[in-house]
Length: 234
Image (cartoon, rainbow, N blue to C red; front, side, top):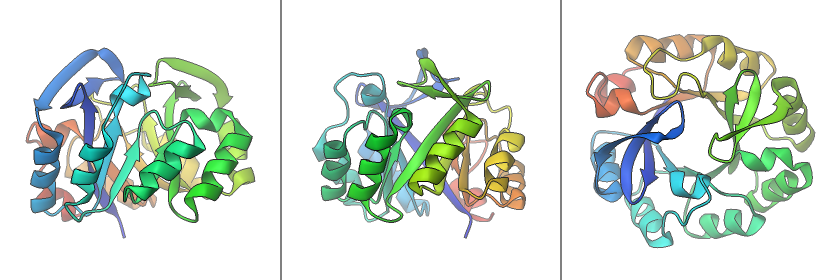
């Protein structure tokens, strides 16, 4: 089933969107992540894509209490941002997070393998933020030396098949998703959720037609160019 997840990116306790991942381009959309999450659940969201931007940038981030309150809404929550230890993976699992997303850890194969063992089947996904065909890490501030082929090799070796793939240059721009990027990972045998730049229902349908497992949508929902009802119709 193709699943559309609303993005709830949190910085300084507020729901925000960035432009191309830059912390200097913050637009605030809501002052209470829990209320925003509840609004999405009431609108029919089947999964919530929660991102701790402070954690991604190496700052104190989302509290366990806030995450647990969002989990208590009864909609599965996938959480990413600053999760760089096995203990962090275990801690969020204990608090009811359905799936943990990791990005920077992909640079450390033994660490990623340990995280996958801790999470168990289907509960760890790789969050791939791609800039110029290379993996961006540490809150997208650093472009690593890992090219797409290197990333694929690491993930295959560990057995991680679920990916959230974001084209950094498209994120927050509403220029449309990078379909070629998503297709490259699908063709390599991965289960891909596309993110970055999604504008409307046509973009969601294009991702679905490629064979993507779903999509993460942010700014288009917050600015009213796409509704959850329309998204769910895909």
